[in-house]
Image 1: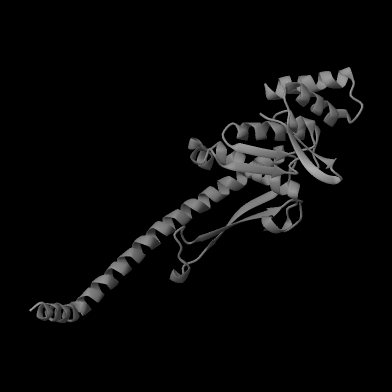
Image 2: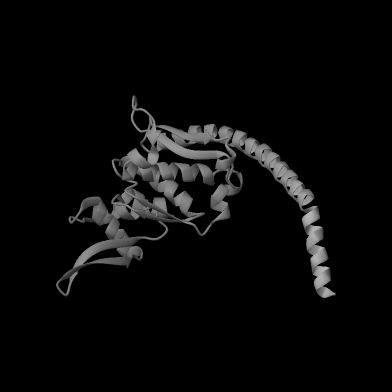
Length: 244
């Protein structure tokens, strides 16, 4: 009798199969319409946000000694269902023209290490100042690494970069490799990285600097090997002014 019931169920399933397929097809079409509407709305909002991002990033870049740089958040939109993704119908690529008269090219291909770091700093600064803190507020444990961010700058521009890095460091963990005392003086924590010869081999050594050692290191960064009382006083003033 049990086998008979199984056969009856299988026959019933086969007879109702066509109706089931039609129901599933209708659900797929409804889901596609819903996705298309939501993705189109999202794409429109992205296009608006991209223009605002371009404007604010270029303003930040001007402050970071990259005035005249053209930045664009380029959106490539697809209508083919085969290209639909969970993130929508747009592909975003950052384009940049670092010098007047140059065409826009992908950031990943043409920017130098220093330029990439400053562009990243500009973008992160813009995001962090948005209502709610953007990703900075959502992922406070995220670590940002800036290398060669001081390439080709000095003086007031270096001070501005240092101040922005410190502000970003208040909400994220920021690691910055720098040779400029103006930038190093803004850090919450200071490490010295140096090469030494140990047992006949060259090794890299990292040392955490306490207050006195940090002042001495800033003085060395300011004047090299000739550290005078005036240089030490300058280093002390940098720490008081920038590190608080």
